[in-house]
Length: 179
Image (tube, rainbow, N blue to C red; front, side):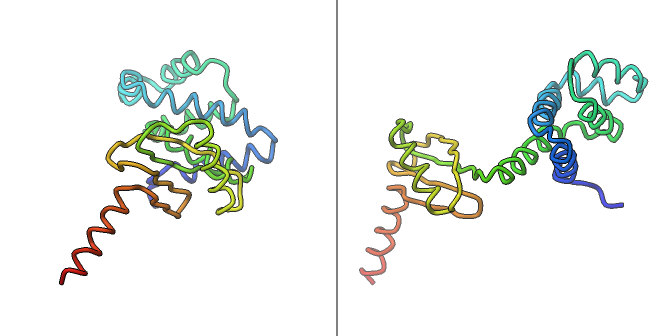
């Protein structure tokens, strides 16, 4: 049997269950708790210790997770038993991607030289939404090395409107013209 290298299959299964039972948000909350657990290095070391009996691991997880959807808890136990609880963050991200697609939302990573103001953010969001014909939610980051403008990545599409890119293009054209 091939080894699963990402959380995509687990996320797909969780999403299908959530959709079937109309528990999309409940599953999202549960998967967020699992992802947060996976970040705790001390807990991860304890759960990966083969000397700690599984019932003790289960009890520890019950305390740490608190109130959680029973099926999400079962997923946690499955991940622990397979030694792949560290993939909890990936499963959560993949689930959110499926949830966004289901809701008709596209996520865009926008990098700008300076922090985006509300008006600029809304203008970029609207323009990107027109381009992909979906509602777009942007995740804005700052990188002063692009000098000005912005770089946006929406799915497989890359839009580079940075000053750095324009300067590099101008430099290339001047070099070619000088030959």
